[in-house]
Length: 116
Image 1 (tube, rainbow, N blue to C red):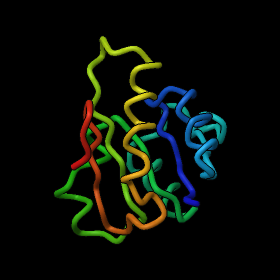
Image 2: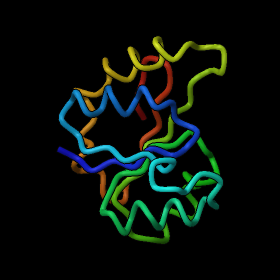
Image 3: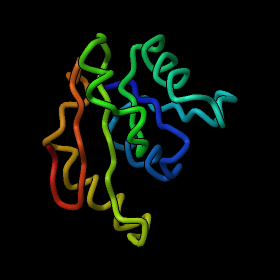
């Protein structure tokens, strides 16, 4: 089981999906952090010893993250025209191959049908 923070640009239905897979999920909106700066959200995830799931390229900047210790970042790169149901289905199919509880100092990119 991993602790996961969902950034505000991630649909809330992903929280339900990740919870069904046994993870502890917190949405930044539920913590009163809507509109917070990227650094604040990243620091919040680190303080909670959590993987950060985001669609924000600024949060997942490899040049910045390579210089700091962190619990992992998952960057979702899905087309805007893709429905939430399809996105969640894609993520559900990839979750068995994604060790969310062991992503320290790792950036994972999820794209349609692939992890990298």
